[in-house]
Image (cartoon, rainbow, N blue to C red):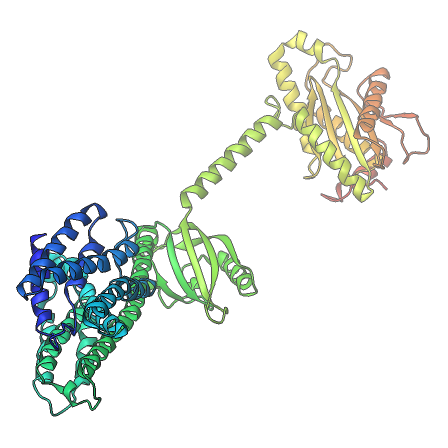
Length: 626
């Protein structure tokens, strides 16, 4: 506060040197600009102390220039009022600091500090001078406005900049302090002579100071110009005296307009520079964020043109593949992508060029050591911001090798578990669950294709007596050999041999008619008899089978259960007729409906042998008897 008091008092002494006549008209009034700058930077609860210090400074300064006590108290009260009004309006909150580089704030400052604030004291001063000194009211008002407004515009931004300058900013000035010094020396040189109007030389120097040091220093140079130019002008020196406009205060008015032009120049330039600095700051922040993302991301970021040539690659490629970015820039994906996966990448890029926004594909990438790893690429097209045309690809590549291996292990475990669920543990063939699934699937497929579907039910004859006679271990071995005998005959991929339950087996024969199924059943019985498995509890002396055959062409409205019922009925008939035989349920493909034909154990007929030869020649295709 002491410094504020001294600054205000000294500024009044300086302003007194610019007094153009005995009436007290000042060219420029500095004190109010200093006090306004302090209030704009100080919290509101400090204002009473600063206002008191400012009033004391104004009072002491006025005493030093021999101002009468009455005028001293009146004018300085008006000065305090002139400062308090714009300070209150410009600083509604303590957190809101002045920013003269923002165009809205600058306009508010010029309106409130240079017009609204001084107009009330100027009017009161005009009334006072008109009443006591018979001076024209308008002239008194304009003299007050010119002097105070010019002082506020020159001084306030400069003082704000000085007070907000940190020590490290002063240390960073280095040799740039020569610019304002050069501006001051140039101003002195211009105003020391009165023969040439060289005022235009101050503008390039002001712009230079503005570009290098900012608005505050440029406003300080304008303040120096006002101080030096005002002093020389008051004492009849300088290029201002060359103007030919007559009038009592013409030189002062001309100098004030010149200072106003300087202020307008630096403020207009500060607005442009502030926008450029903010844009540059935003771009630097974006660049820093992009660099941070690129350097810390484990994903490889690739920018490529529309032909797939890489323009830029992040450093994450080193950790993933061992390749350095410079090794890959300028090349396409063909050089490191597995040849089998190249068509996948080409197809994905083609879709993106055709208009797809983005896509994800998996492929194998060759590392520097020659090995391959699985990678996942998320590719998007980036476009020109002006023409909106595609200009290249943005590719985010992620290492998924471990995940891929884990997926393969999981799939293998799933298949193993699925096999355990659908495979009979004793015989190694399909179990009842697998049988139900395949039968439902083949029923739908044959319904769609209009082809016959055959089913065989096999039962080991007198298997309980076999277990009782030879034991359960021999019984388990017998069941395994029955399954092997069936698998020796039934070899088409579409056919299924399953253990239906206990000593019963079921065989699904897709695209096989009744005659073909009958031949397969005969062959299975022959294959088991040829093994000559001893069976002491049967009249045949060895293990035999009873087989039931059924064939249907699936039709809408029918179900697979009907086929199972027919095969079961045929199996019952085979057991009823004495076992060791094949019986089939007569269907639409046989001349007699609902009759049961028997296969005798004596031996196969020549016709059956021919049927078997015809069937075996068809391989994996449809099995139809001639």
